[in-house]
Structures are given as structure tokens and as C-alpha cells.
Image 1 (cartoon, one colour):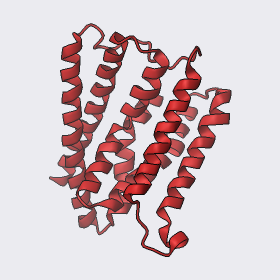
Image 2 (cartoon, helix red, strand yellow):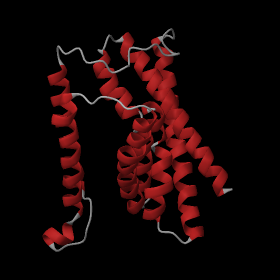
Image 3 (tube, helix red, strand yellow):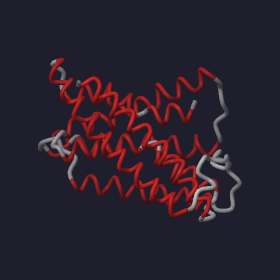
Length: 229
């Protein structure tokens, strides 16, 4: 039963993320937002929604190891699995700003996360990701997002978000209902996936951090994998 719930939860996560992205893009188009903003915010953050909901559910349920393991495992999957698979299928060019701005910031963000988690090394106290640490990380995210959006004004960068979606002709109020329903699917799928993964971890004699950095991380990274490929 745990295997069935694991697969069902993953399917709900993938379906919810896919519907959320498509419906949000359609809403953004009706609001006349630029292609860059749609791609950077809705597509980029929408494909990360499974990781977000899994990690939040884990933290609420007292499974901090699974929350952190999911974050670390997903970052590893994004860099090695997804980028590796994409480049293997078809090599692609890298824009100058990505090597000068985005990639260095991604490295710095990982270093900051490592430092915030090393309380025992720096302050001789228990290793935790505290509420203050969370505020620092959120602040950096908001600052980086604002910086990128400001720098993008007047640019002609293409994100691929201009392609039509199946929701373009649907009324905006119905689109909002669809988006909310997809969020509910993400919540339900996240809880199902989390509970079954924890049960399987106990059955296999594995720690929650190990199973989250492998099965959970790979599963929640599938939206990015599919999008990139």
C-alpha cells in the first residue's frame, strides 16, 4: 500500500504542478505580463512547487531531516541529473549573464545555506535551520528576484513562455479556480508522498534524510526534468 500511495502522491504532485504552471501562465498572459516575468517567476517557481510543499509538510510534521534532505537532493538532481540529461540529449549555448550572474549566485546561495546549517562549527551549538535563518534566506531570494526583474526591464530575453497553453481561451475566473484546485492537489499529493516515503524509510531501515535525498528528491525534481528536456 505504501508503494501505491507513494506513486499516487507523486502523480498528484506532478499533475498539480503542471496544471498550476499552465493555468498561472494563462492568467499572467491575460494580465499582460511580459514573457520574461512569466518564465522567471511562474515557470521557474511553479516547477519547484512539489519540493516546496514536500519540505513544508515535512517541517510541519516534525521531519526536519526530510525537509533539508529534499532541498539538498533536489539541488543535486537539478545540477547533475537534469542538466546532465538535457545536455546529453542536445547541447545548448549558455548566455553570458548566466555565467556572470546566475551561476555564481547559485554557488553563493549553496555556501550560505551550508554556513547557516553549521551552528556547531561556528557557534558551538546544535545544528539547526532557525526561523532567523529562514528569514535571511527568504530575504536573499526576494532581493535576487527583484534585482533580476529590474535588470530585465527593456531586455528582449526569450523564455519560451510565449507558446500557447491549453488554458489560454478559458475565462480568468475559471482559471483561478483551476489554479486553486491544483494547489489543493499539491497539498494532498505532498502529504501522501511524505507519509508513504517515511513509512518506506522505516520499513527499509533507512533514515528519513537518506530517503529524502534520493527517492523524494528525484521524484519532486521530475517537473524540472520534463520542462528542461
